[in-house]
Image (cartoon, rainbow, N blue to C red; front, side):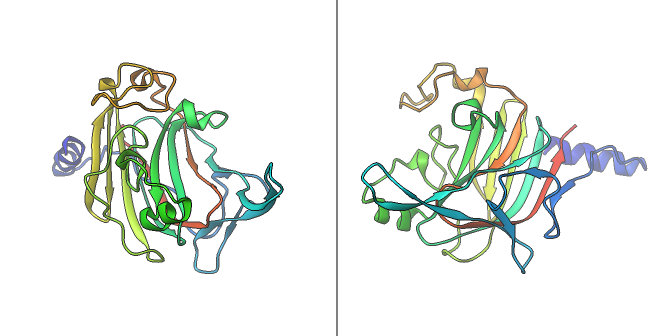
Length: 229
């Protein structure tokens, strides 16, 4: 709200000082990203989709595996990311941010994107709310699941402003957290455990944005990022 107010104040005096949004993906090319060849492709509808490959697990069973993440070439610190996404049935994906591309799981933050019902049914297990769609992954549960039915496009806006991280999906606020409250490794403020080996308050406040290719098909389009200052 304070950024919007500042922009309006500037407009009144004839000067626009808020940084403009940068289009990362407009359906034409992936020039702003790094990825393994064949891992991501542009569809005819102007979306980008992740591709899978077959691999045998330790038991010799053939499974579909993701072929690598889609990473921004640039790093971002305080920003607002907006995009549309669509999930396939049973999909489990996510968007990493302020993270290290070489260690995304421990080196930054993730917004979970998931077909909650389909994935849990397929995996035959129930996940804690802090790992479901729209969560501050493994740190805080979403207020509710604001996603549309599987196969429909969803809109999300992720905002990182110093220690405050907020996410909206389809206009509903999933979470607003202050990472400075995560002051212990492996622990959330409510006392529950998390996967992180470092206290979240100590993680970098600047890093890459990455789109997860996790073994199920997911689409993204209209990806924009706006620096907050």
